[in-house]
Image (cartoon, helix red, strand yellow):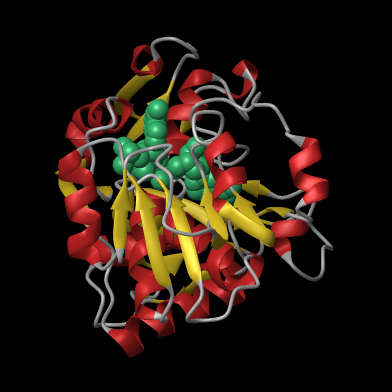
Length: 321
Ligand SMILES: NC(=O)c1ccc[n+]([C@@H]2O[C@H](COP(=O)([O-])OP(=O)(O)OC[C@H]3O[C@@H](n4cnc5c(N)ncnc54)[C@H](OP(=O)(O)O)[C@@H]3O)[C@@H](O)[C@H]2O)c1
């Protein structure tokens, strides 16, 4: 089968280790099954893998891709939940210390076929296109858990999203405004800020800008570049939810500010199958749909990776198989 592979690791030039090549079809065992992939979405995670974050060189080559939608072995339309729990784990699989994400230990979704535990499949509603469904299991699930599970903020509250254009950021804006939050955004360019407003953000600011008032919670995926602003933007007793550190993870912790203002710093990663089911239902009920920047054939995956590495995407880049 054809597959998009990480064949090498290069922290400075991630695309150097990317190739589209023939690869053996998966051979699922026991309670695993095979999905024929129709669409799979690109995530920043795929760039991290090529940079050597979260993977060891001796696991290469590995098929990239964390999430997908496709057909199961009986021809049912399914969405693939990308969090693979460890045997015997019960409870929130996002908290399982032995969990992995597709493309970390097991081959990922950028291929004609992917093998996953049967438990990781859920029905794809007809109302969602293949490409829309493929965007949900990583970026949109992460945004759902950040907002609705981790933030502790009720609808009507004010949420600052750091970054306007990314997969997680656009999901936060779309989910948050639909659920009744007042969403404020920072974005690095005028055009990205305008698109965030078009998507439903109530206000958009330059990175680091002084806000009209402090917010109830900040959604942080940018990391070092925005962390000081996040800690200044949140109200006393408010929450910073962090699920990424795209620009680095060595900012000052600003401990005095954290304890004096009694801030909550809450980590959030991916989500559970149950949260993914509820996310899918949320989209069905509200009509909200993932913001898709580009849909490319799998063979042209390199162009999508280059676009994300340059920070040019607005929303999700999706590969069709
Ligand atoms: N913990 C988890 O489970 C989880 C899940 C999903 C993603 N993540 C992490 O979250 C981060 C975002 O993921 P994504 O897939 O949404 O990535 P993406 O689509 O590439 O988005 C990148 C985002 O970072 C913002 N950004 C601001 N300053 C930046 C800078 N100096 N350099 C680069 N980007 C900057 C961009 O905002 P502008 O609009 O201003 O360009 C954009 O919103 C990644 O680090 C990813 O690994 C974690």
